[in-house]
Image (cartoon, rainbow, N blue to C red):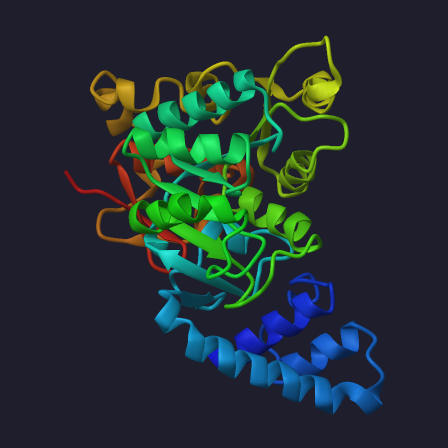
Length: 353
């Protein structure tokens, strides 16, 4: 399947309200567009016109992308984020604006209330800053409230951040975040499964939440009511096998009932970035590089990696007996410590010192 077909499939799947879930079994099919239409239950009489419309829209999107500074990355591109490719319904195409290499680095999502209290804004900003200090990419949704606070905290600490939009990357929503989006594009990356010109429709935002969690090793919820959209992100994270964490808040209003429900169900309590790293199995992270150097030299996972060779996740699972959900965080920890590097195609190699 070529880029044009992948873009056509992506646009068709999203337009049918099925997003990428119906694409997962069609990756190697030469008739992927017909497969999407079939899975969507489209009357055969109308399929030809709809397929032509999808191809026309793909042509227009691919032509418009360069002028908008956008680059499409299909699932078969080596730059496609490995963690995201592991979820059940990865987007067939990611549209990016900025540096797509950011998406290959270890990330934690920080999301929460749009109508956030000053407490939630302060927490979101502080977590963004602390994660940046520890070399972690901060992923969020560029929304008002906690999301934008986390992005800004990360940027103020000169860290890398990824913003996942529910619109095309040339249609920033909310509009008052145009400047923030431009800064993220310069010092991180903007991401969407929607092509140029796509409007910020209500149905787009629940779909984009699976991408926020899919790019991340864990999700932190800051101030969520019982009906908060950030709980959708938490649910996606659970389904994807990612860690879910939450910040406790006041019990005097309903603003934190969703967060507290997650905590009652076993989510990790988060007060600082160190709590996040501990949950991910990275106690101390960047602060302990020197003191752990001798321990790392005899690390049993590193012993499975021969110098100069690259390894896929399946190979390492077989060699170590460690489940993928635990192996990925460990590999990311070693990458943070400079012991392992990500290679093309979601592979890893040991750094020779």
